[in-house]
Length: 356
Image (cartoon, rainbow, N blue to C red; front, top):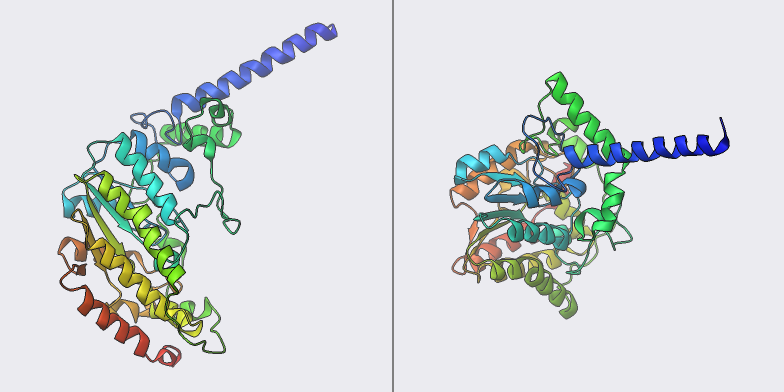
């Protein structure tokens, strides 16, 4: 065989292989970049930053459940029954306010049927730059696939010819043939069964500061950062979509988390930042604000946590049920009384008792 003929055959096979990979990834589309999931195909959903954008664009829903890992154990089926909706869950582990807001905006832009957004806002990221994003954060460990979220069709080559995504395509087809069910939104990124919970586990998950730093209030610059973060990433969305109801709630971290903040001298800042957030949210007519920092039956029971922040899946259920009943609702009429009680609880709490 001549070299020319060999090269021709080789290039033909190579081109055919690339066309096959691209066609398979396009047809099955394991991250829903081009279309909704195909009927009767068993899709595996296990990668938020690759799949959430497509979920927002192509799935059938009228409710968005979102937040960080604090929300990942939330059952969409429970939300559906409590609020009479058809929901999708698009969380971002370690996500910033901006990252989550941008994903919500994709959903609202592409799906005019959305009537409800249920979103958790974490205290740990409240005093953060409004433009903070994993793609630009040098401390972020999360890969961010711009070729999926931008509108540049040329970048799609990186998706269509992606060997890793071809593996997802093959997995979807194989699971279908084996009768393995696809992932539903109750189980999408559900992590309850992956961890051990309990007081001893929580106390081993961090090292307590040896010295107690003096708690100081927010500086003027920090207060501005908080207000800009809330305005840019939450309130602006509500303003742009006045027909949508936004339920925004603050997750109940364990008291051990606030022990860490207290020892570092950041506890008063947290209290002030939370009050600013709740105050701003309570002024917007289509935002319902909820806070559960006063639920001592939750935050003091370390047996329900796997670390200082993350609670068990049952608490996710309890939170959704509480919101559906209007429990924990913060309004202009009760915010000052509520925050007075929260400040007293956290600033006067005997944190040494956690270790007894």
